[in-house]
Length: 120
Image 1 (cartoon, rainbow, N blue to C red):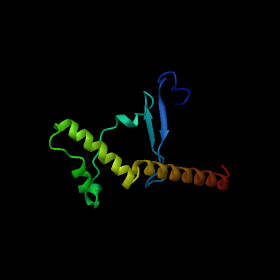
Image 2: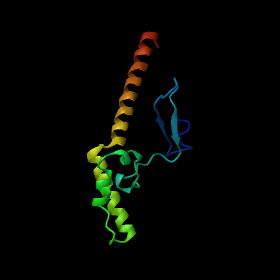
Image 3: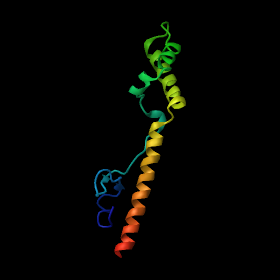
Image 4: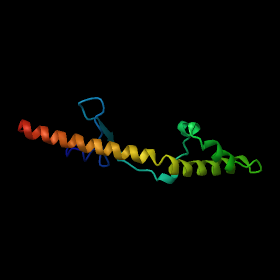
């Protein structure tokens, strides 16, 4: 935060987001700072693209037992699907973060180059 705002919002934080579809850089402002969650605490997310994969039905059949109670059964299936997703598709979220970081770096270089050319 700017020096004048620091005493008023001691835990404040600003994050410059990517320019996507605009020549403006959006800001993410938090009065309480930013906290990052552990990857293990993230909820299971079903990916629709899995259904179209030829191995999907095999993974379901191999990890679904009719004798197991529902909640443990779903937990085991979620774990198996997450592992299968990583092996077959890779970590799409990590790849997306890397691509966004790469784009952000290119945008910073372009801004720096433009400032040098303009003479500011």
